[in-house]
Amino acid sequence: MDLPTWLTLKDAGRWVGGSARGHDRGREAAVQGEVEDVIGTSEAAEILGVTSREVRRKADAGTLPAWQEDGPAGPEWRFRRTDVEQYKQVRESGEDRKSDSRTEGAAVLPATAIINAQDRATDAALTLADRLADLADLRETLEKGAQEQANATGAVRDLTDTIKEQQEEIAKLREELQAEREAREAEREDHRRPWWKKLFGGATE
Image 1 (cartoon, rainbow, N blue to C red):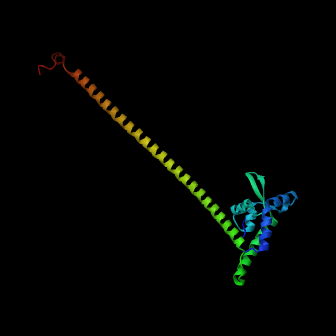
Image 2 (image 1 turned 90 degrees about the horizontal axis):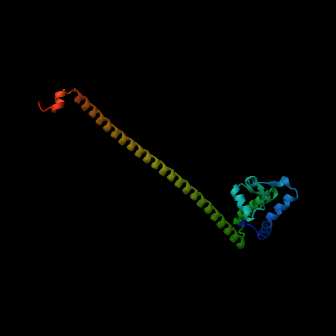
Image 3 (image 1 turned 180 degrees about the vertical axis):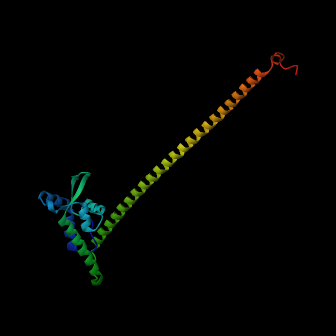
C-alpha cells in the first residue's frame, strides 16, 4: 500500500478502501464501455511523472487501481485516466499538506507513517532486487566475454601448434631433399670414375 505520511485519518480510510477495490473497479469501468477513459502504462507514467516500472509496481500492489488485459507480448496493465489523475491529485494535495504541517505543527498519523515506511522498505527491496539482477546480467556478460577470450586463446594456440608442425615438416623435407641431392651427386661422381678405378676400388692411387 503506497500511503504517504501526510494523509489525514479521513483521507487514509478513503484511499485504503479505494485501493483494495482498485482492480475490480478498473474492470467494471472497462465493461461499462468507458473505453476513451482507458490508458496504458506509459501514459499513466507520463501523467504521474514516474517510470513505467513504478506504475506497474503500484498496480501490482493494488495501490493504483488497474486491471490486466492480454496484449501482443502478454498481460498488460490498463488504467482509468480519472483514477490516475485522482491519484496524482491526492498525492500533490498531500505534498501541500505536508508543507503546511511544518508551519502549523500538525501531527502525522503514526499508522500511516508505519505503512509508508513499509512501502519504502518494499520499494528499496525491489530496487535492490533489480540491481542484483543487473549485476547478475553483468556477471553473465563478463563470463561470456571471458569464455570467448578463452576460446580465442585456444584457437591461437592451436594455430601456433599447426604452424610449428608445418615448420618441422618443412625442415624434414629439406633434410630429405638435401640427402637426395647428395646421393645423386655421389652417383654422378661414381659414373665419372674410370672403369679400372671401379674395378680395383682406387687401390692404385
